Amino acid sequence: NEGKALHRERRVVEVKGLDGKARRFGGGKHIFVCGPDSPQTLEQTLATARMAREVGEKFGILDRVMLRGGAFKPRTRPTDWRGLGMKGIAIMDAAREETGLPYVTEVMDQNLVEQIGAHADMLQIGTRNAQNFDLLEAVGRFGKPAILKRGFGNEAEEWFYSAEYIANQGNLDIVLCERGMKTLYTKGGYCRNQPDLNACTFARKQTILPIIFDPSHVAGDHRIVAENLMAACGHLVDGSITETVHTEAWRREQLCDAGQALVMDQYSILVEAVLEYETHV
Ligand code: PEP
Picture 1 (tube, rainbow, N blue to C red):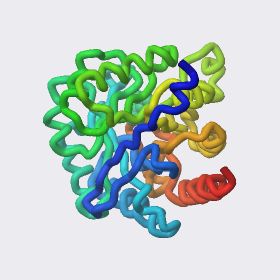
Picture 2 (cartoon, rainbow, N blue to C red; picture 1 turned 30 degrees about the vertical axis):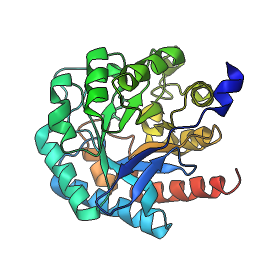
Picture 3 (cartoon, rainbow, N blue to C red; picture 1 turned 60 degrees about the horizontal axis):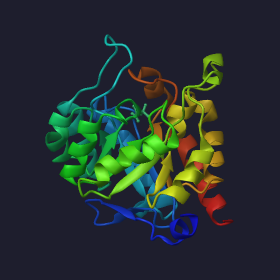
C-alpha cells in the first residue's frame, strides 16, 4: 500500500572502482556514467576515459563518475557493426586500469554473463532484452550490480516485473534506467525515443530501486541531450548514463549511434548544470 511504500528503505547500489571509491546509486547524489556508445579503438576510448576522469576531478566528484561502453551491440539491422566483443571488453579493462573508474557494459546472451561479468564492474541489460527472462535470471544469479533499461514498449509495471526476475535470484543491486519509448511522435523524427519522465517518479514510489536516465538514446541527437537530462533531473533521478566522446572527429567516426554523443567539453558544461541544479533541491 502507498503508506508502506513511502516508508520502505531505499536501495543504494554501490559500484567500486580501482580507485577504491564506491559510486553509490541512490545515495542522494547524481551519479554520472559516461563514455562511448561502443569502444572502437584503444586510443579513442582511453582519451575519452581520461577526459571523464578530468571532469570528475574538476568538479570534485570523482566518486560519482564511472564509464560506459558496449562491446556487444544489439543492432536492429544484422548487417550493421555489432561491436568488438571481447576485444572491446579488453579496451574497457584498459580504460579502467588507467583511470581507476569502474565501467558498465551490456550483456545480451545469458551464456556470456560469467565471461563478461568476470571483467565488468556492472552489467547492463538493454532495452531489447528487458524481457529476456533467462538473461535476467542469469544476471540475478551472477550477482554483480546491474542496470536494467526499460523495454521501449514496456509498461512501467512490466519493467518492475523484469527487475523482479533479477531480484528473485538474490541480486538486489539493480538500477532502473528510463531510456525512452517508441511512440507515434518519435516517427516525426525530432527525437529518437519519447522519454517517459513520469515513469521515473512512479518507479521511485513503486520500487525501492535507484533510477537513472539515458538522455542519449532518448534524444538520438547531441543537440537535444542536455535539455532531456535537465528535464529528468526535475524528476529527481539518481543519475544518468550519457554517451560521450573526446572530439567532434570521433563523433563522426562512430560506427554505432553516430551523432548522439556529447563531446567532453559539452558534457562538462552539462555536469556543471546538473550539479548546480542539485544545490536547489
Ligand atoms: C546502449 O546503452 O548502448 C544501448 C544500446 O541502449 P538501449 O538498450 O537503451 O538502446
